[in-house]
Amino acid sequence: MSKKDFENMSPKEIEDYFGVTQEQIEEWDDMLVRGEIPGVSVGEVVVGRPLKFGEHLRLVGFKETEQKIERMDKRADSLGMKRSDYLRWLVDKDLASVDVA
Image 1 (cartoon, rainbow, N blue to C red):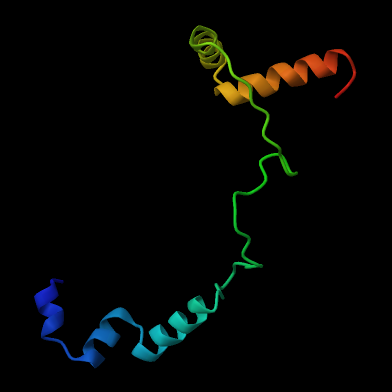
Image 2: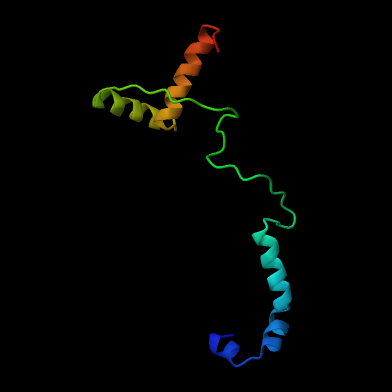
């Protein structure tokens, strides 16, 4: 059905076509604006990214030469990892080897 077909229909015909009344649409709109979604539990809105590892993280950073960074990236890529995941993996592996983790 084209837009032109709907332009020639009465509001009642459009409601019958879609099986939804204007009142139902307004009720759904009010409900969604309030954050109520049927079948979905919605809690308090929290600003920010979800915790990646189940707890708050702190930034650990250091500078390195371009050449070494390229080598890190190449190695991480060969393992199917991002640089940050590769560096986390190395630290976890080292700490586990000395029983600090």
